[in-house]
Image 1: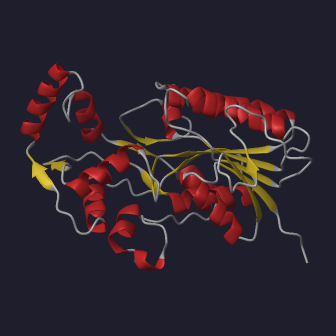
Image 2 (image 1 turned 30 degrees about the horizontal axis):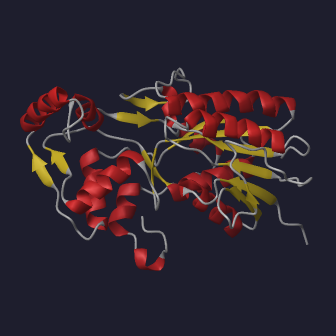
Image 3 (image 1 turned 135 degrees about the vertical axis):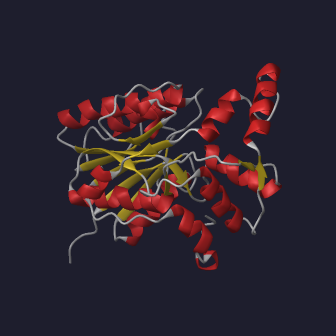
Length: 306
């Protein structure tokens, strides 16, 4: 009988890491985990330490550990990646899959952005992810390791963060609203599919960078309404656009001490979508339609809330 392929998942106690570890285990991998959690196989804070793998060799390393916090982004995302590579130096893996971010493009508006778009991140988070990508490109070349970089967009799932969690919480407590006539669209993807992409790309021997989306690019209104169905059938108020523009001007005067200002208005009224056709060409990719999943999935049969 063929020996189980081995895999290491960093950040395995985090949001996307849990999905990746589950996906690989379900596919028959012998999965080892690395995180700061006490139940990790390798307990390590990569921002501070080089892990000791005691001569272990992994066929696949899925490096998911990271943070979106700008203050600690460089230490966790860039330095943590370098420390992981040091720990793997004696026995490099066959394949290294890095979870980066679409933030490396540094844009807040655009349609069908593909992997050829210039990389010009504007936040410390985006810069740290790009620095990690650049380091890994050189490290994997030197060590004859196949590198796959995933650049997910907004990711839905249990433990999600950022704009999606803000939206879900606002809908739940009744403070979120739709802007009448808002046609802004966003690329999204479910964490289940990010995990599938990790496995399928590693198994296909694919290298390079890949945007990861569900390919639907729903409107923000459709996405919010789908969350409302999921969150006990909540109702979302529709607010005229002119009211929101006036409120945003007021928010600008109060300099962050008001729920809406021009910066936040831009985020919820501008379209930002990404092209994932390169991913579809590399693997058999049939992702979940996030909006449809939120509206129709039978969550009683799944321990993951979203």
